[in-house]
Image 1 (cartoon, one colour):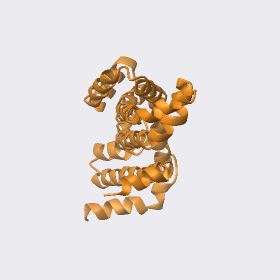
Image 2 (cartoon, rainbow, N blue to C red):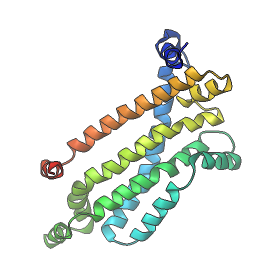
Image 3 (cartoon, rainbow, N blue to C red):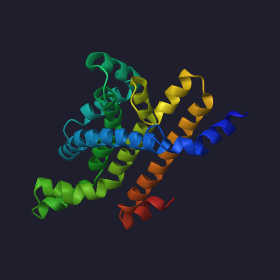
Length: 225
């Protein structure tokens, strides 16, 4: 039978949509790992990016750090952290956080740094404090770029969180690893389809949010050729 037809049978079989190993449960686990990763990465990267972008200090360090983190192999980090910490949730989450930080950090820093100095000077001339200038002027203008970095990070995490199955955790990667163990390639293909569908859905939602928070003036400017 055709591999794609077998994968379709796996996805449409009611038995695969129930129980602790069913698709809904695996999808919830996948989303849960991703959300935990994103929350930790946001807590680290957004404040750092805001501070560097607003103060203008350490921009070169941020660019270098983001580039260095991007070059690290996530699976290699997972292996290293597992050897150091043992099995559990911490090693894969730490590896995924290091994957998510660069796009969030770069997007936040770039968005704030790109705000017109005239706007910042005008805010200061009106008597705004540095924090008021940042959150009332710079962040609203930079928000589409910041969300673009978050969107990029979310897609990378959703696509890569399958690695948690390598150390016997759950998620949609479980079908990939279990299928490989028994040479059930249709199950592996089904896993890829599910991850891709989840990533595309998340991307569409984040793109909608990104568009909604963009002011009409900026949106019209961006739509012009």
